[in-house]
Length: 105
Image (cartoon, rainbow, N blue to C red; front, side, top):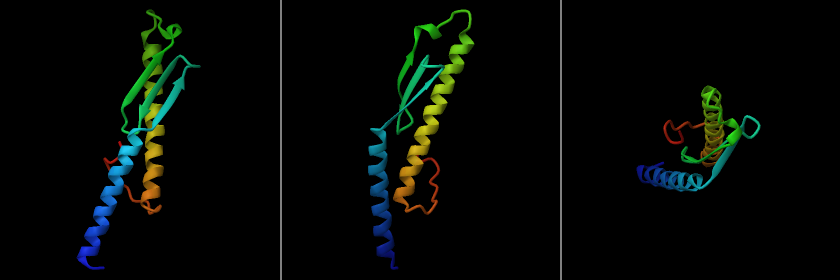
């Protein structure tokens, strides 16, 4: 391969990555914990876009339980979003196992 060919392939890959990131930003993942007490939705950019808390989960005498539920829901949604982005990255790289740190959370 000559240098021009390598540069063109790199530019194509960069363009595809940008398109993928934009497309993934429009996707959402929802996680519900505590039997529906807390529901969190995140997008493919790893941003929380929705948080719902059932009124039954709000116990002034036990704020730690609610905190734990929120943390569990957020962590689960983020894990699912990370898995989704890694799967899409695998499609783009042809399953070569290329890991691009910082690209997707």
